[in-house]
Length: 189
Figure 1 (cartoon, helix red, strand yellow):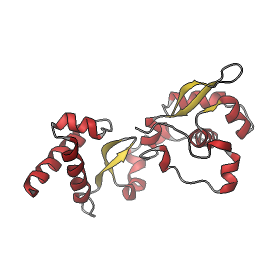
Figure 2 (figure 1 turned 90 degrees about the vertical axis):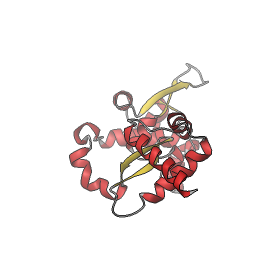
Figure 3 (figure 1 turned 45 degrees about the horizontal axis):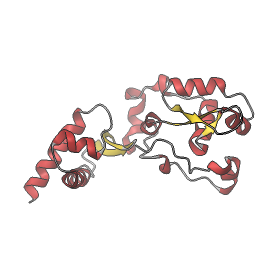
Figure 4 (figure 1 turned 60 degrees about the vertical axis):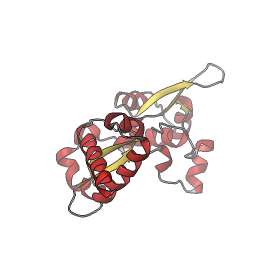
């Protein structure tokens, strides 16, 4: 029944428009009253509907949930006007630290410093304040140092569905990041 699928897709589109945070399939099912399999079908229909040049936004999977967002191809033109341009810019040091955490997580401050070669205290505080990094627990090692990993906010900001969507490292970079080399757990959704 195409009419039913269109109605389900329209309902989901309205919900995604009204939601301020990414919503996973379970939450979308709860919000719409649709069973999970109909939510999945309606999402597929909705994605197909927005897959043309007329629409400047589309439903995308980000941070383990679905949001309506500007298409990636348009974001470069829009980010200066609509992005949090001054707030969101990260220094090179912050990006290095964030990259180390993303690819090596869970990782301790000392491990980050060992890779960067400089103190990471300030950068860790900054990244935690921005909501990109969080404490994930303590390492089973002498002194029980705190470990850090990325957050859903990190995934949203970099428009990643999960940590697995990070660009793959070349062998030399993988060696630099040690055993973490992109297989870290991170926030999956």
